[in-house]
Image 1 (cartoon, rainbow, N blue to C red):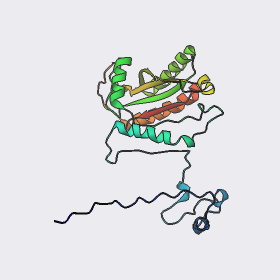
Image 2 (cartoon, helix red, strand yellow; image 1 turned 90 degrees about the vertical axis):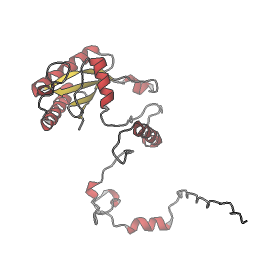
Image 3 (tube, rainbow, N blue to C red; image 1 turned 90 degrees about the horizontal axis):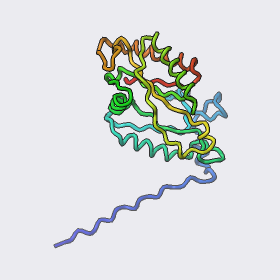
Image 4 (cartoon, helix red, strand yellow; image 1 turned 135 degrees about the vertical axis):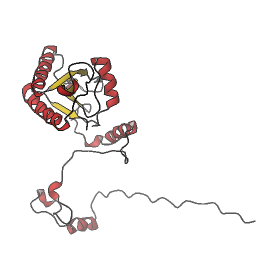
Length: 241
């Protein structure tokens, strides 16, 4: 009876390190690509075939993670966090390594989470996804008078647009990692929940009247622009689509 010899996996080829000095072949490969003489230092490839160099965008360390079938999962967020940590070398830092330009993860609106938070903190029930917007607004730290003033300005801008601010959520933060420079200017973050008044009504539960998505998005755009110029704060509004 013959025995099958043990299987020895093929050796894994080692990944070559980048040479400190570029080889002649690397230089030749670079010059083999036709370049755009109008680009900075003539470094950008010229438009050719399906490639159009005017569509190129510069990004200072950006990663993208999604589920290939469009399914929502917390693993996407945890993977994005790991991706962010792997790009520490792309972030500008000051003399104190705890101070930098800042980095973060942008996700879709977590409807189930916000629905729970709004019911607990605001006493209001959010409508269906796509029928409300939530913003991130940064206010000056330790200035409650200014905070209240700007929240009132925001609400006053929204009302004539047919929008209603259901309330403001205080975003919990952990500034223990911040250095003295960043910590001295750490803002207070509030999230306004905005709905279309004609659709939601004046109560704490959506009345479910006719909802015009395009009208809602247009009014949100106007609100964001007017609020940014009137309040002198950074304001972002996102509607779930």
